[in-house]
Length: 294
Image 1 (tube, rainbow, N blue to C red):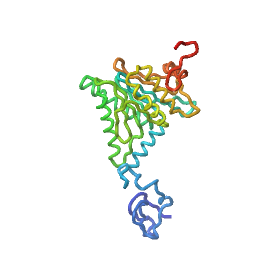
Image 2 (cartoon, rainbow, N blue to C red):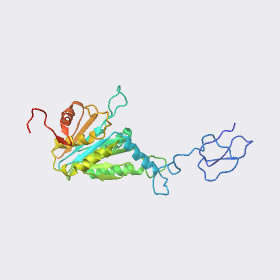
Image 3 (cartoon, helix red, strand yellow):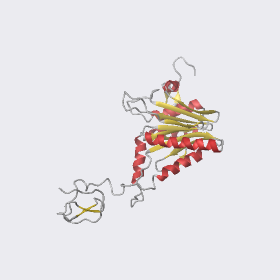
Image 4 (cartoon, rainbow, N blue to C red):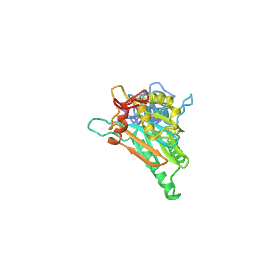
């Protein structure tokens, strides 16, 4: 039996009685009578998605599109911005009843935090990079790093993976919430290394329903207080749930950033007061409980 060397353009078989060259399975030239290793002739979905540096004839890079699909399969997260505050809410998942829920909102600095959807490991890596950038700014300039510069640095880091051979794009989407001297900011960062300044945004699984809710109430967000922002964020996040699931204090995280307060992340029992208000909500408005006035 002949032994072959994989993935070389032309490799002679080690069996000297056979002199036919072994061709790369994706080689455009094929010779009759060439022996191939079983399974080498199988192709991927198309011939332009083998590496991130390969362009398709339509001008698309399929590896980046696959990374964006990973974001669509991650647990949903919602962000809303007003004139004074930014609120992030995220839906946490657990692999089983025996494990804890994965964190989806990570602190970066006193004035900024990030929420992720997609590969959590990639999100942690980018979150660590953002922390280092903020520390450098405080050490060198003795002031917090502006949010736009922070997001630009993350976009540049993510872009390197879309330009070099042998690497893959980051399979995570992020919502970056922060407040600096120019006011509150909400940015969306994509695996394609594009980033957008948003008024409100939702990413992750079934996030289209949340975006529809946000578009419906978009004009109301600018003048809302913090509690109302959190309330509408949870209402939008609830649109992303499957029909048999509910928001609980275990699977929801809330982050608040504003001019008059440092960044804070609420988990577990600190989330429950906001969830109690959802029980008396219909159609996006608060309905008073029985015995309450108004």
